[in-house]
Length: 226
Length: 127
Image (cartoon, rainbow over all chains, first blue to last red):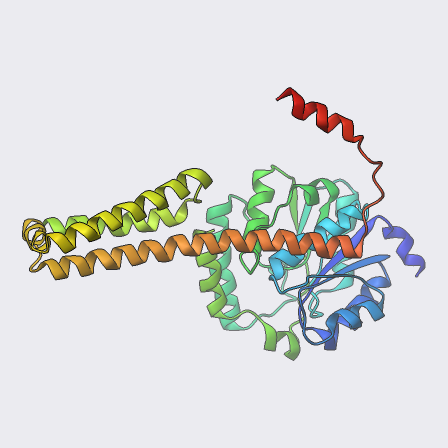
């Protein structure tokens, strides 16, 4: 708990949708390093909100399901209202590592950038399956071509933003296209960004909930007809 | 054939219209004008049923009925695209509303000192 003092100006945002079985552990783990975890419950039907609250998170509840992009924006606005200087976005399914998040905030604190994007492709720790790799590669090529920001991993839920960057974001893509939208807005706002190598832990649980190829089609449609 | 050109242009126009955000007053006015025009065309079609055959022949379609069908398909596409847009806009409004409720509930705003009501009144008077 003494660790928390290092990050008392940092707020971790966890978008949450039907992850009751794992979110408790995720929140408890995060709280070992960060004093405030904001879990944005996106209309879960499995009691996720109660689990997150019991684990010690500040729970913000969408009255209806709006999508992950909407949940992220809600979480970021909540973090800003709580006075956070640094905001971390962190997936609720346990695939991200707290140590990675801490290292990313440290880079923000050092003034290296306004935004730190987590990337699973900067080293060889993460091993996605063949189909997943292909879909992610396609998404990266598309995003780099359309946003003008060249990243090695465009769909990673682990990001760290300073207050200036967090205030500049206006995520309007409610569903999945928000990842590209965030990158695009970071580019437009001329924020300084860096990538940080992170380890994505693909468990059977996360694999069972992962994005499918259908999602890629939906993302593309949402980006064209925004 | 003229009809191919017309249809291709119409389909392209529908696609492009879908990309642009419908802008309040102009969009609404356009919709209303379209309704009036459609009623007018429908009336004329009833009174002069052979007109469609003549137009069809002119643009290179077999029968007036076929031309009507093509027109209906294009109109339906346009309807689909503009409806999609309107739904997206409505979804956006619902999102903002839900977010406001959620955040206010979780982190009540610090009490703001009340703004003197008189100021607003004078501002209204000046208009």
